[in-house]
Image (cartoon, rainbow, N blue to C red; front, side, top):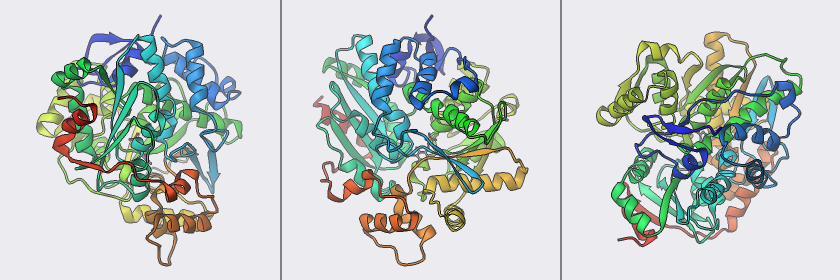
Length: 496
Ligand SMILES: *Cc1c(COP(=O)(O)O)cnc(C)c1O
């Protein structure tokens, strides 16, 4: 029996996993969710004998039931190979008393690689399975890291084009360079005069534009998404929650049945939602600590039950979390709202029309799995500096937000449960702000000189992803207004 998927906003249209991956977003604007969440069918002891790739198969086979074993295993082996600079793929390291789950060992040195290394393979397999002959156009809005990871994943993949929109003034210098130097004739990168929310809203509108969809269809294109609204992004992220739990068990840090916390630096709520799904599947998780930067809309939500996007958008030192509309929260609302599609639809309509929504007391009481915290730039900087002074380990700015929030959590709750801090990017990606935290001398303005200095201070070699930027040619320089995204796409695809 296949596990089917339906929209968070209506149950009328059921699709298979491969169809949900192909479509990205449901036609009604909702996000695809599985009809039921599978339960782990192996014990932690059994899981502890598996490699990352084998564990990935165990998880994905429960969700992507219309893929054959061979198909899934092939996707997994193509994704999690020596593109990662460590055999473990997602190592958990102990630094001082803390555990960090390092998710930045992939090609573009941010956690987006964990899912975007496999998404292109899942998508192509899904297209074959559904006898799609159209060319697939991947539309992606990025706050900095998804863009590069998706470009790297889809570059020169047959029968696909990828178009990435990023906020022109809202990403780090290394992030921007990584994107605008992307090779591949099927890759397109556009800076927009606007912020990430503008880019994401624009992409969602394009998905819901029926007129455009039929023009695209006529021209032989179908749209899909590499954002975490795509269920093909979310499921691969469940794997590393289980893998890291098992790692602590294997190294004797925890005993069978022990619960642990995770602190997750959060933006679009994709990463932490995968943790919630892992917990729902039976992984012994105590709290999921949601760490925000100054765009602390999620912190306020967990405190009050009111989600209010009507506030100033702040550019912070953790740009990949500069988000006011966290798309994947819709999937959580759906889960805690007793899976009532109409209820989710009402909340989302309220968000669109009034700029806010408020959940019921009953729903709020079901948010006990979460704890919300936030940190501003100077607090984050202070934490990065302290961790470096005490241990020599260098956190990137996003992980710095998480580590600061974890300190606050301990102070407030005195909870001594073992906790994993999810480390979402290499410090090399945000060299400027990381150096400000750990170096007292003058910081060079050139990215490469910054990387050299960081190498000296951190004793971690400059990753290839950064080293190769030094000589990379800029291949993309398009800029458009946030109102012109549809026009840009039509230009690229030569549609009138
Ligand atoms: C994308 C990103 C985040 C936020 O993850 P979400 O799944 O959007 O919540 C945090 N840190 C880094 C470095 C990222 O690239």
